[in-house]
Image 1 (cartoon, rainbow over the protein chains, first blue to last red):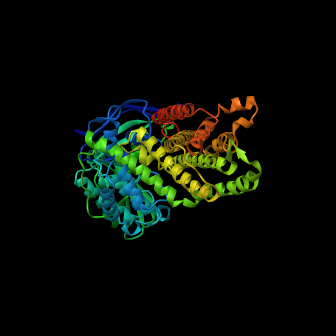
Image 2: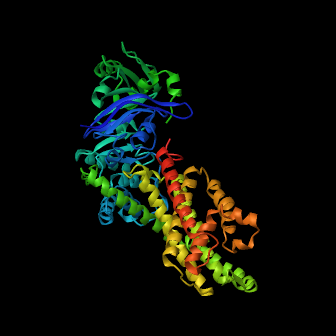
Image 3: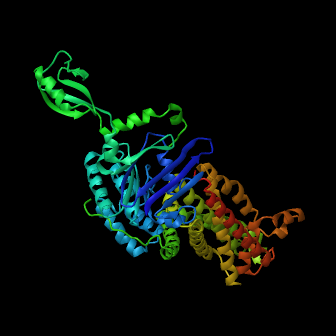
Length: 313
Length: 272
């Protein structure tokens, strides 16, 4: 059974803007799935429809076999959502927020308190349990929203930009946490602007653009489609002129830094050999941009401009 | 962050979803109760203070010169009306501010994404309004007992009138909050509709004092029927037929529940 199955999903807003133009998408049970797209591509509209915050125009959506038109409550019971914007009552405490949210999912008060403690501890918020939520830092608020989404222990967790504004240390620990949840069987759908995050965590990926799925593949297969990568080479000694290696084009960023584009058919060994022959030694090397980011930009830029202008978040 | 979550596989079963409705309803009531108590200085105290001022000025100072109204001392006559006035404004105010606040702060989404049918959400907020109406009504009753004696003519009529009235105005507050786009629109109806209707609703006078045309016009005011039904429960006097008053309250409650649910199902003011 698919955790999520979408067919022909469209959404046209009252002002005529077409946010989704017929999305077809399946997400396997147990998957860690990335849903990426530029601003205005339709990601948030799609997630809004899954969580019933946005009314669809046409198409079908089912969550673990529950059609949202026929069995909306059963579908909603399977989902935990971490939205992009803070949407808890800032005048309540984290404990109250979690206990109440568990109650809205039918968990009795005594058990709800236990669950709240469990997830406050897991998300490192136990010492803030009785503090007013508005007094929490940005990272704590994000973790509180993750704890709230998990308190009813959903089968499908949807995270819409969960690590936006979170420092790198907390982000990495959130990654570990999400990986562990996923390994225990929770299906996760992640949207993020940190493409490194998607590349690190997700096994499968869909790129949505202009209200349509532009790509849907395994992460590893998609990355293999990248035709060329740009590498930044840090040189041991300074150079004053752009080196020449047949078949490769270099940019001299500064006297200690070169950039070179290497296509799928070419080899870095040839670059190193060519540079060594000229007495240029590479001390270290990195990708200029994240590989997924590079691919993402190529896919997005390939879409007609008008298509992008017709979409909205 | 190193211990993983466990799974609950049966949360989407019909049995679990059935139980979730009742637990969800209770949770909304508990949350509303927590809100009322957390900001008690805004929710409970003002009505008690205002009613004490009414009793001092209209009851003691002016009322002593008025004498009897419908054969009852004036202070005693206005007491049920003042209690009902506080129930009306607080039931309405609780739901409109709480639900609009939830929309404004976006935490209404906590309820919208949960597996709760819309009728449970409406009933939960109405329950919160009823709770505040009864709490404030009790506080104002205690204040009124400091100033006057309140006989109980018919306890069931008192209880039914206050509960039905509170439900009707809680639903009114809910519908107002559904449509409100800003705080001005939250205050518009209480200021320009509810307050005039309440003051012309027989809280301070018997409509037998009015000229005939004004008396007939007053019958169109639902608050007149509510106040008089409530007063009948205490004093045994009323300007309206009790059966008609309860019919109006019951019909209003059913119609307004239908309207609130209709707009919830449409997602008015909440869903795109």
